[in-house]
Amino acid sequence: MSSTKYILGLFDDPDVMMHGIDKLQKNSISIYDVYTPMPIHGIDAKLGVRESRLGYAAFMFGCLGGTVIFSIIYYFLVHDWPMNIGGKPYFAIPDFVPATFEWTVLFTAFGMSFTFFYATHLFPGRAPRVMDLRATDDRFVIAIDAKTNVPHEDITNILKEAGAVEVKHNTRKYVSYE
Image (cartoon, rainbow, N blue to C red; front, side):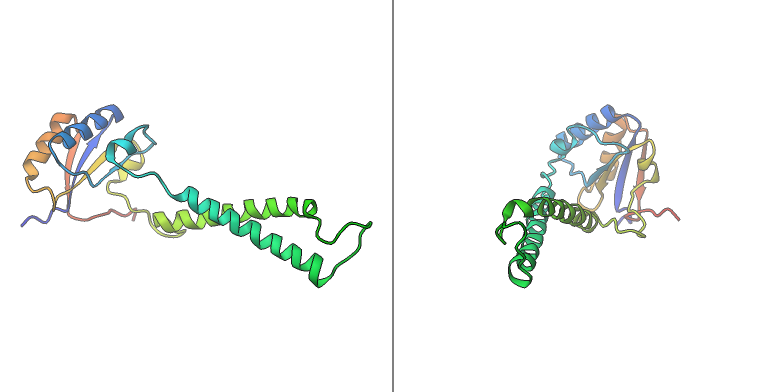
C-alpha cells in the first residue's frame, strides 16, 4: 500500500485550475480541498461548499450583547438606583438606545472574531495548516485524497492534461513554515 496521503495538482492560472476541477469531477474523482492565494468567484458552488453559518452566529452575538446591556441599564436605572432627572420616567427606552447599539456591535465583533478563530483553527500563535507553501504566494493547488481515489497514475495524468504545472504526492497532511 502506498504511503501517499494527498495528490496535489499545482496550477499557475485560476482559469486553468477551474478547468482542472471540471475535468476531475467529470471523471468522478473527489476533491479534498482547493488552496488559492486569492478568492476565486464561483469556486464554492463548483466544489459544493455550503454557505457559511457565521451570519447566524453574528446575529446571536448581537442579540446577546443588546440583551446584556439593556438588562444592566434597566437594573441600575430602575431597580438599584432610580433617579428622577428632569421629571423623566425611570424606564425611558430612548435613553437606552445608544448604549444598547454600541454593546450589540461590540459583542458581535468580538464574538465573530472568536467564532472565526475556533471554526478555522487559526488561533494566534498557531502555525497555519497549508498543503503547499506556494499556495499562499502564487500557485493554485487542488488537493485530492489518495486513500479514497485509488488509481494514482490516472489522477496524475488527468491533472497534467488539465494544465497542472506540477503534480506532487504528499506523504504528510500539512507542511509547516519551520
